[in-house]
Image (cartoon, rainbow, N blue to C red; front, side):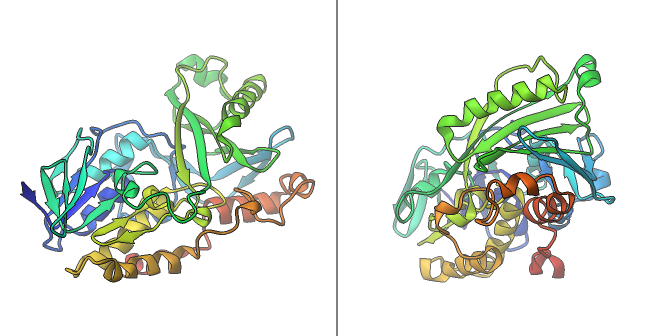
Amino acid sequence: MEYYDLIIVGAGPAGSTLARSLQDSGKRILIIDKQDFPRDKTCAGWVTPAVMESLNIDTSDYGSGRTLQPIRKFRIGMMGQPAVENDHGDIVSYGIRRCEFDAYLLDRVTAPKQLKTPVKSIVRRDGNWVVNDTWEAPLIVGAGGHFCPVAKLLGDGPGSHETVVAAKEVEFEMTPQQAEVCQARGDTPELWFCRDLKGYAWVFRKDNFLNIGLGREDNHKLSEHLNNFVDEMKSEGRIPADLPGRFKGHAYLLYAHAERPLVDDGLLLIGDSAGLAYTQSGEGIRPAIESALMAADIIRDREDYSAQSLQAYGEAIASRFGNRAVPRENGWQVPDWVKMPLASTLMRSHWFTRKVVTEKWFLHQQVPLLESVANG
């Protein structure tokens, strides 16, 4: 049996950020992931300057040999009507490829890593957690996404009726012929809202890589909406007519509708395993990073890992992101006041699409850096 102070299950941005943040704490840390890295990760793939600053990433260094697409504009519309294009002037986001981004973050972690290792068992024994009958620690952190095995230890949450968003996407490198006919531009991601406001699609070009996808509340209609969107984009010349491969799927919880507990005795959830994706956009990278930084602050000088002691983390999450379990009838993407036919008009407004949809819902420019990051 190998003993650690902390076992992190999941080596994505949340898990790697937590491990790196605790490198100087003196704690013995093990990070486990079922996949090897670099690995494919279903995600549209953009990060804001706030994320890069929180992670202390030098964009010049990162952009050397990796995809880093500066974003200055957004093209936003409702399906079936013309789009609105807004120029923000400065760089407001960066396009990245998750296979590169996640591997870069994990490479900065000096703690032992156990990759290509599915978690087959987690057992509570004498006040510690034992993983796969091999590794033991008094504290285990779930950072493995929506289906994280650590999150399953906490059940499905109160009521067990969490709103799960399902998404499908494809990302591929275009041939010279495809790149020539593709009208989507690298500095201008395209966001297309479903007419029923229960989801949105995107077309996102990063150099010669193209990412196309769609996410919705109701999974049973996902493929139908996706196929209709792809056909429309092809007919308008926004994307190449010949898309390779099949669309890959993933799922996540929206913060306001998630009911999943965040802590228990010797157990804590961060990132998508905690259901922290922003409610209006579904974006999860910044909440994942910030939850890991907040968890590190709680764990660093603590030896008491009881649920009562770890509740300080839950309080920090609520203080940062607000209260959870908002009534679901308000819908997924938009507040109650944005309803048809008003939504159709608003989505043709430069002011609304820029100030509300882009800057508030997707970029969260009104949210300052996490205080511990700003001070540290």
